Length: 375
Ligand code: UD1
Image 1 (cartoon, rainbow, N blue to C red):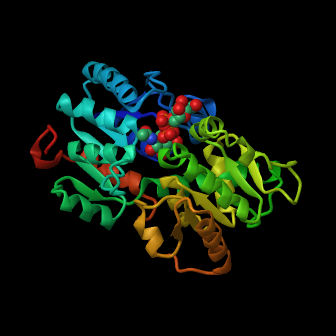
Image 2: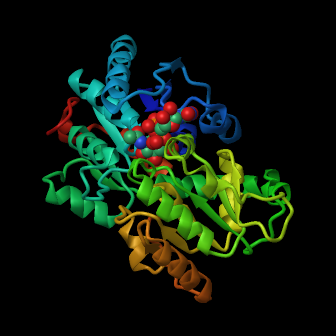
């Protein structure tokens, strides 16, 4: 039986860890470390409750801070845990500051790293996530990719060993939790929404929230499309709206049942509500990476509020429109989504059974017959 330390800390990581953790624990010991990057109940605990993720074995309570301070605090604390637990490997997910801290702490202690969702690139090094991905990939022993494109990208950076195209772990999450969302989420009733007659929007990327002109452009775009548009407001975005004195953009939130509602601003939602809300939406507008894929898995067209995307396959397949923060382009893409009745649905990111494959591969010997990371 092997021992794995899993490092998670931000909302998308809880969603990715749920199916893998469940599979991993059938044959291995898992020691779960929560960095505390996300700490509000609706950004963290709700996912543990709803998705049956075991309580963290260690909570590092790192909280907010500048990128350097936050990542450094995690790094120091994860190192202590790894020295104590001495795991066979460390599992990290995606591209957050928790991901890169886990990768660095493990690699410096010569503990092999398994990176789930490896090989993604936006080719924009101003994005903190891009920096985190590049570093995490180059420090990893196992690189579990969601698609052929990510395998090719790693190869162009000289990484060919330990690369396994297992499919996207978030497809597992959708497959496993979608029936539960149907049974348990009452979000449509709660917000008085009719299936397909509303849109869902999320905004949280620093490139959008930290640039008042972009943020205003996105809100203007959302105001130009017919409502209701449901906006679960990320804490970063809420703070940015207040800081940039843009509160008036949120001001046309109306009575919960009114048919003339445009923007319906709600606090961040749990996974089951979010799945249900997305599944029944007419269009999804987002700058989230995960939601671009969820939109495609759920067969809902997506408008991406960024200038580039890591999930290029969704754009090529016609499910995703990249429009940036320009109001006219946002409104036009929304119209285009509504006008197109049917699209082909190619299998872009595997079959939703990545977790089983990852556990099989981790059970085998590390690559190169070595227990230290390759470079
Ligand atoms: C992080 C990830 C991003 C991921 C996103 C999902 C990095 C660099 N970015 O961005 O890849 O898509 O999570 O949400 O790791 N805050 C709260 N309550 C919370 C959590 C955060 O109020 O529970 C506030 C923090 O004080 C901070 C802001 O929200 O000011 C942003 O938090 P941060 O940790 O920078 O990450 P995200 O923007 O959420």
